Length: 238
Image 1 (tube, rainbow, N blue to C red):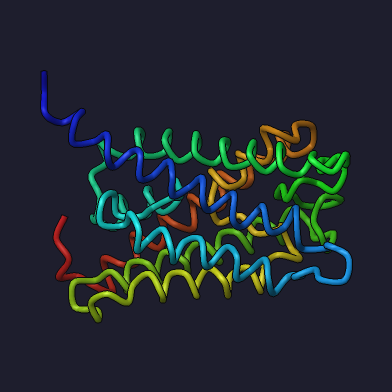
Image 2 (cartoon, helix red, strand yellow):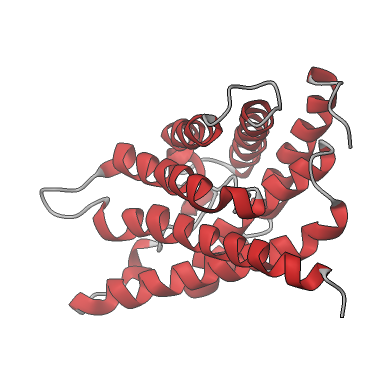
C-alpha cells in the first residue's frame, strides 16, 4: 500500500473538521443568535463569528492541512503555486462534507425549540429576491469575486515565507471578518463554495438553484488572486 493515502488522511480530517467548525460557528451564529430577542448579535457579531472560526481552526489544525477550509482557497493556492493540484479534489470533497455536517448540526439544534429555521433562509447565500439587501445578480457576482480575491491576497501574503511568523491566522481571521462586514447585505457572504453548499443542501429550492454563483464567483476571484500573487511575490517557487 502506498504511504500517500495514510499521509493524506490527517490532512483531510483537518479540512473536514475545520470546515465543519466554520459553518457551525459562522452560519450557526447567523441562524441561532443574529436576531435572537433582545440579545441578538447582528451583522457585527456574525462577521466576527466567521472570522473567529477561521482564526481558531487555523491555529488548531492549520499545521496539519494548511488550514484551507474552503475550495476557493485550495484552488487559489494551486493557482499561486502554493499547493499541489493533485491534492485539490480530495481537499474539496472533505471541505464540502464538513460544511454539510456543520449545517446538519445547526438544523438539529435550531429545531429544538419547535421552530423551523428554514423559514428564515438558514443563512444560505443568495442574490436578487434572496439577497438580504435585494442586490442584483451582477452586484452579487462582482462582490463575491472581489471579496474572494482580496481574501486570497491576504492569505497568500500572510503565509509568505517572509511574513511575520505565527500571525497569519490573525490576519486571515480579521480579513474574513471585514469581508463579512462589507458583504453580508449583498449575498449573506460566501467567498467559500463549501460554506454555501452546506446550508443549500439542507434548505434546497432557491438556494440550490442559485448555488452555481457561489462556486463560480469565489473560485474565479481566488484563481485571479493566485495568478496575481506570482507577480507580487515572484520569488515564490511552485
